[in-house]
Image 1 (cartoon, rainbow, N blue to C red):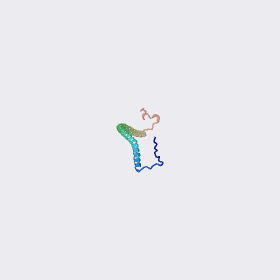
Image 2 (cartoon, one colour):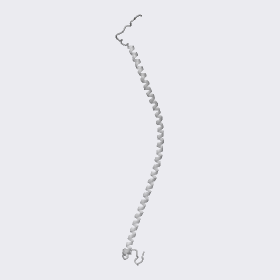
Image 3 (cartoon, helix red, strand yellow):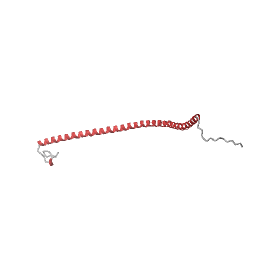
Image 4 (cartoon, rainbow, N blue to C red):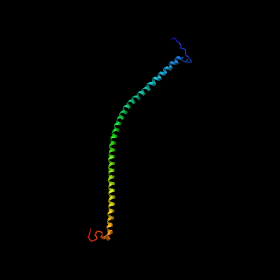
Length: 141
């Protein structure tokens, strides 16, 4: 056995500038590779989700437009019901107003007739309350 001893270096040698540049390039490449694949994967997943969500939003938008049109039609129907009701209330108010005018006119007519009766009684002898139904000649009315 031949014994050759390798010299043991006791102090580490400093790397050459070329070795440092190569090591730095390798390290940067490995970081970019690891970071790029992770980031790229995340970005692809997000882009896929965005496209899927865009289709769902388009579908929801179409449904919303359809429901909005239906709501507008329903609103128009209810507006017609309200208008008809308002017209009925107005007509009822008109009838009530007419009845009040008619009642007032009848009261005026009744008062006028009472005054005429009083004038006629003024020309005739006064009659007791009990004899109101009797005419001056003693006959009943």
